[in-house]
Length: 382
Image (cartoon, rainbow, N blue to C red; front, side, top):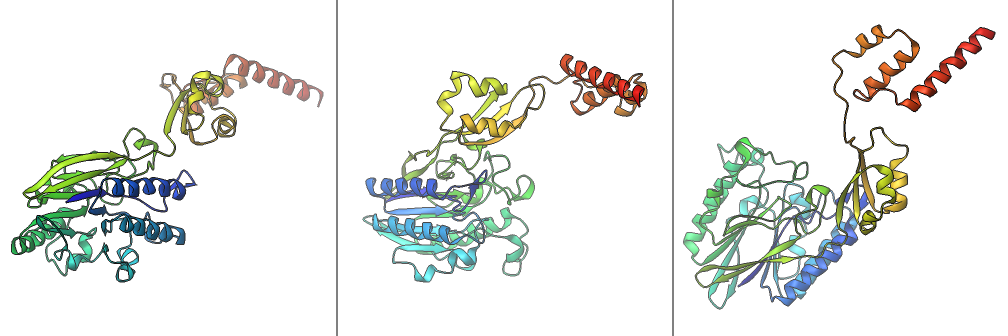
């Protein structure tokens, strides 16, 4: 049996204020083509299908179109909910979906698999939706953490599998021990402490399809993250986009291959003086990229985003990151003000304070001197 493992579509997420729906549709169209070309039997989507619990109508349309296209390509589709999804909203139409498309969002049914049969017998797919410990304490006394609820869930899966026999795939959405998350991106499931799920939790199945981490990762030959199909932050720029293609043989896990997905628009971070970024030929290759600019001028520049957009139409973010900052002043601002003997020194103390040690430039000092001289003349004639 041939299985495609994908996750974290985040339908509806924006990228620095820009809609990603059209880009995601193109990428998922390519995924459907891969399913057809590789004669995939089952597509597994490991959570975070939507980016929010209240997706817009266009997000539902995209999901319905893609699920239909995957089914038309000949695959059984198994979808679970993640921490961004509302299990109720994702699962409300499960009973209305076409044959061969399964949306699994009910924690009480996680040990009841979707069974798909090939020439070698049954393969049982156990969809574990995102499990919130606080909502399961009445049903599963004693659970407090993600590790607790995933451990209990996998115990139920293994018990059911022992009774049924056959090969198996489980699907879960969590932080597993050993992952390298993207900072500030995979949110809402705590990292560290008790909410990291030990890798040993996932023993007993032939393949463990994991979701929540946005970059592909292999924790063990049978336990992997596929990552998101689209880049959703500049921190992900170096991480490839794609999915895992898994072959299950008669005796269990066989070959696992990575299938790259297209990147609609590359993400690039550029660093340097603003005028150089605006004019130098070496940056011309990035005019069509999503661009994050860190300009290194000693002082903030006027209207940097407006000026950058004139050269980089897809500039999404800009930050002032001076290449060198003056040594920190040992005295406090109040001490510098009290030590100032002239008005020009007061100006310099203020500028040094707001610029973290960078006082007035030579040109600024001349302007300040002119202004102070004008004030003296005005006061003299008043």
